[in-house]
Image: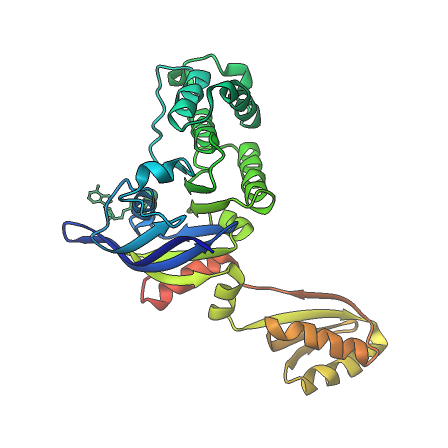
Length: 312
Ligand SMILES: Nc1ncnc2c1ncn2[C@@H]1O[C@H](COP(=O)(O)OP(=O)(O)OP(=O)(O)O)[C@@H](O)[C@H]1O
Ligand SMILES: [Mg+2]
């Protein structure tokens, strides 16, 4: 069942089409990434999906509910980390979480244990009684993340969650996001400028350009779209190299270079690799290693924008 569904979703700000005819679905347990330049419409999409903005046109559903009209019902099941944290800086971390826990309907007797657990998870336990105003930027970001997860929501919207986090906290956040999805079946909707982060975490990504959907798919699908063929490098037993070359040519790929114990192969699609390996093994070729370079999500991102005539 799709957890998030939009159809022709559009939001105007005066003349600006911040989100323009956006149609997508996000499935339960998926980590879904939203990428795009500054001003592409990512945050506006998150605000629409959380009922913080009304659409100008189109429809949207989160967990089967309309965020615009059923916001209160929905908020018990969704958590959101926005660009601007709405923490109360005069309160301590502990009081912030206890306060929002009550608002989100966490039962009063569960709040202390839940708050303690989250403060531990985000490395804030020791300073939990300090006023948030005295926190560093990254500490505030961690607290805002803890707040988004307080009521164990089914759907979690994260707008630039790693912004301001140090490398250790970033790694912990990534592990946590994977855990929430893989082990707890929660759905994550993640906006990020960090393309390595998206490549590591996201099952699928949407690339927005001026509010419109430029591409949608898994990082591998998008890589195949911009570079259908990959170059392979095979390491073989030296006496098997000639035979391997024959098998490869017969399969329709091209041997670009023959080395003493390796072959470079052009013109193979990623999807062909398993069949190629099977043919080599069946022919008795001793294959020790196979490498191929697929475009990274960063290369894909720039290629997709270049295809739209954008200068790099
Ligand atoms: N409240 C608003 N009033 C007027 N224009 C707005 C408002 N919010 C967003 N916009 C415009 O909508 C467009 C999309 O903005 P949005 O914040 O969704 O982009 P974004 O993809 O999140 O960008 P960033 O990567 O910088 O966070 C921009 O042109 C922005 O100026
Ligand atoms: Mg934004």
